[in-house]
Length: 196
Image (cartoon, rainbow, N blue to C red; front, side, top):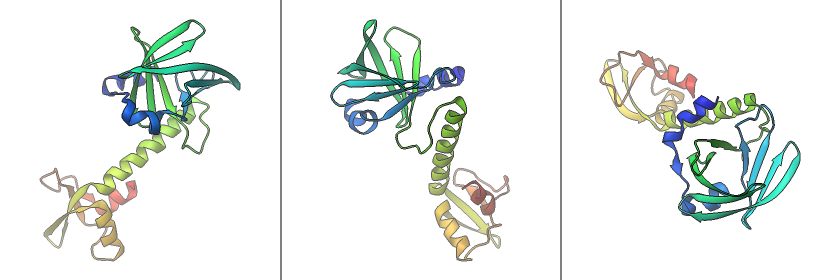
C-alpha cells in the first residue's frame, strides 16, 4: 500500500492557510493510514493549537502551530518537528517531516459514517469516495446520442437520464463522448446508467 501512496506525492497540493485551515484542517478527525495494520492513530488539530493524538484508546495532548506557507510545527517527545503539509483533496492530508522522504498519509473520517480501523476499511472508504466522484463526473459530462440515424446533443448524462425516464429517447441508443469522433465503442445510454 505504501508504494501506491507514494505515487500520489507528485500530485499533491500544498497546504494553503487561507483555503484549508478553517474548512479542511481544524477540528477534523485525521486517521493515519500508515501502519494502521498495527495500530490506529487519529489526529485532531484544535484551533487553540492543541493537537490530540489518539492511538488505541490512549490520548496524547501536544501542541502544533502554523509557521508560514505550508509549514507547521508539532511538539513531540523529541522536541519541535517542522512538518510540510499537503492535500490530495479535501479528505486526504499528507504530512512530510522537513528534510525527510517519509510521508504520513491521513484520511479525514469526520464526515464518514463507518469507523476506519483497518486496511480493509481504508480500501472501502476510498472505493466509495472515488466511485461517488466518478458518478458525479459522469453525471455532468456531455454526450451525443444517435437515434433513428440522426445525432443529437450534446447533453449531460443527467439530461439523458431524464429523457429516458420520460420516454423521449430509448435507453439502448448509442452515445459518444463529446471528445470522441464516432460511435465505435458501441456504448449505450443503458451502459452508462449501470455505472451511476
